[in-house]
Length: 94
Image (cartoon, rainbow, N blue to C red):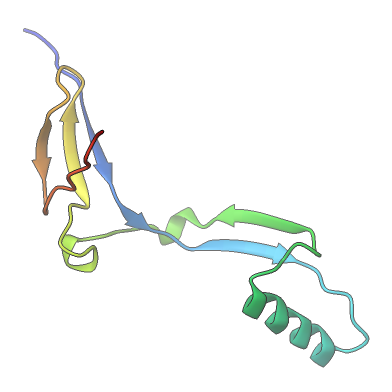
């Protein structure tokens, strides 16, 4: 009997956490700095620690992905998609 290798790619949603410290005279001033940094998407002034919260991973479905596939199964023996659960994304090549 032969063995055949496959793999499944899935699009997921996952929360991440970025920790950082703010120096300020008061908590209110620190909050104001955080809100300003978030509004400007500018965290360059602080050291950050980034982690992926893997326990929050949720598999997405095509209805939240413009009906494009969120699960695709492939074989290592072929480049063809064996299964997809939504529309495929056609990429034009030059």
